Image 1 (spheres, one colour):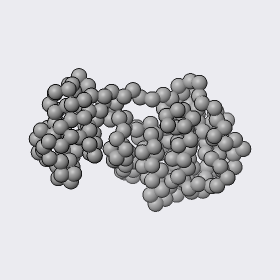
Image 2 (image 1 turned 30 degrees about the vertical axis):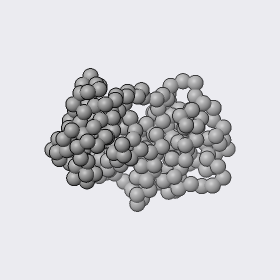
Image 3 (image 1 turned 90 degrees about the vertical axis):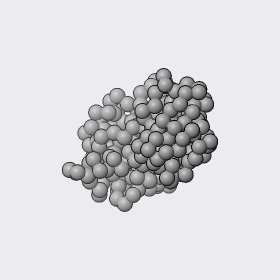
Image 4 (image 1 turned 135 degrees about the vertical axis):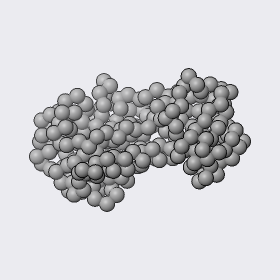
Length: 246
């Protein structure tokens, strides 16, 4: 079952072994015209909210892909959730971070307009940028066969992050920090963990001070300085081990 497709319209109540379900829209067109799915093939499909099905294709029509359900699996959302606060970066570096973090199991991403961000989402670029990140998250989730689609939050200002620092476990990835991320103990509560990654120029001193005063903690990954595109995924890998996800 090499192919995995997502249709948010699938509901657990309708998906039992032997039931016939349909996938329409862009997913059906992609399955039939690009992936060349044909009757008799076995696929995996999900709704991005924990429901996963193994099913056999009954009819491969580009308008509606019809499948017969074989097995049903419902996966609970893991807690605490880990979200990546990724500063907007030039080129595609922020997008690379979002893609890799999704494949590695991030539960949500938040675009951050850091003071040193060269790229800015303003006006029509806000919706365009968020839609682009949502598309990246969706495709990376399909590639890695994830039961849950990560959320893509609204663009956040530093002031908004300071408000979140009071209710979450916020970790600022800062190369000059004295404390290593690997020294962080596993959390004893279900507060969301927020990994904050700065842009190419790093998190500014003023931002570090504001967020720390709000409750965030500076941590570093090691002796090397990582790019904004790799710091978040690297930190997530460490947390996956700390939390027992890996």
